Image (cartoon, rainbow, N blue to C red; front, side, top):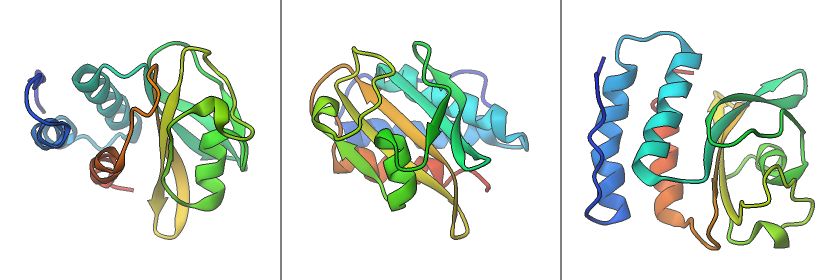
Length: 158
């Protein structure tokens, strides 16, 4: 297990992800507890990118339930198809939302959130949760985030 995180403040976003991925792998190495791994993954992403909110929602009894996260308090439960997280789950795809206020049915857990990216987490063909990242800036997320966040969630042994 890694003891510390080396934050890369220079370089492109892609280079920052490339520096962070092996560190997340080291944090998770030898740890079988998924909640611990999700928590460290959130902390590493928040430290590196200083996003407003980063966390996981896990599927339980046909709804998304708040899991490990970093940031202000959040919505506890989200129905399938509701908000960006529920829509990502229902559509089984990554959603990048440049302006959450323009997203039909957006759930405003925090008014400071302006843009969002949500990635479904698959176990086989079944979605078991989503990674949700919010920014206080409009149009903050792009395909680079989608590619590398997807690589990061694939590190989970689910």
